[in-house]
Length: 116
Image (cartoon, rainbow, N blue to C red):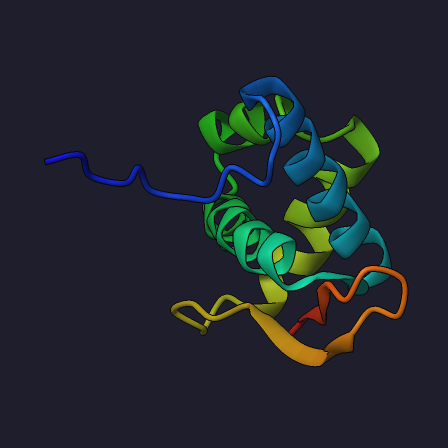
């Protein structure tokens, strides 16, 4: 029997999906919250949680892995400013607030934000 793979496809190929997640995550780290569709919010939440957990370590290996995804400035902000806020927190760094459907196409919308 065919089983589903973990994660959402978001109607994109792998490289496009990866680029979308990087872009959404960097927008969250820069602006602390963004408005997007519910499916994208749920998927980027997983990615952001893993990045913050990685940034909390702060060792050289973690810095290099995060450098694959984000620019030098954003990487520095993530490790030096964002990650220390969550040093006592075990997880759950993001919050998803569901909104009504979008007028144009009826897509379920949500706000994803970093927890204070």
